[in-house]
Image 1 (cartoon, rainbow, N blue to C red):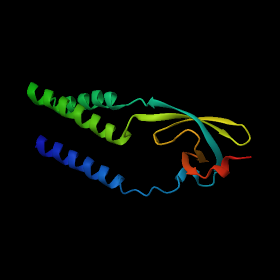
Image 2: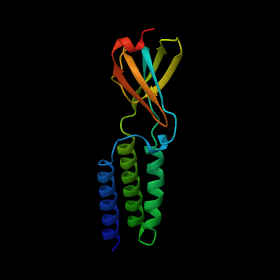
Image 3: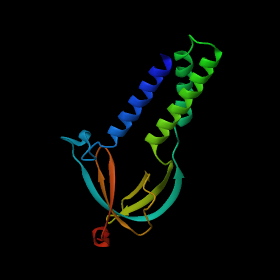
Image 4: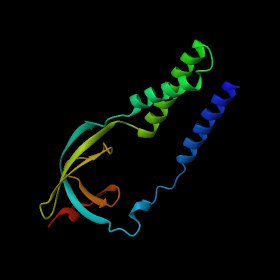
Amino acid sequence: MRIATMKNIFFGLMFGLALSGCANKGVNLADAEQLVEVIYAKVLKTKPITFDSKAGQAAVMGGIEGAIENSDGDSEDLISGAITGAIVSSVFVSIEEGSSRGLLVSMRTADNTDYNLATKNTKIKVDECLQIIRGADVSLIKVEDSFCQN
């Protein structure tokens, strides 16, 4: 019965993950009835960065949960539950987080206001003009250079 339960949980999680990929990528609901700022800035420099990952913590928590779930069995059940829980939890968190690579982008507006932004967008280049849409989230869109001039 435990194997069937683990399979059901696994397939339920996979189904939920698949459905989340179909979610609409529209305007953030937190931006409703909020002022959203649009600015234009020229990229001065970029620096590669690595974002922290929660996959290790998820593995520990998944391992503990898997061990507890299988604590009524023998030691092999306990160990296999802990290992399975650790692997599944860390894999799901890694998938959700995506790549840990990113950029620290230094930008300047036409009125000489400087901004620094950590982003997962690794395709931003020095001297590009970006439209920055700032609300609950920040969106970056490459635009023509004329938007960044006085």
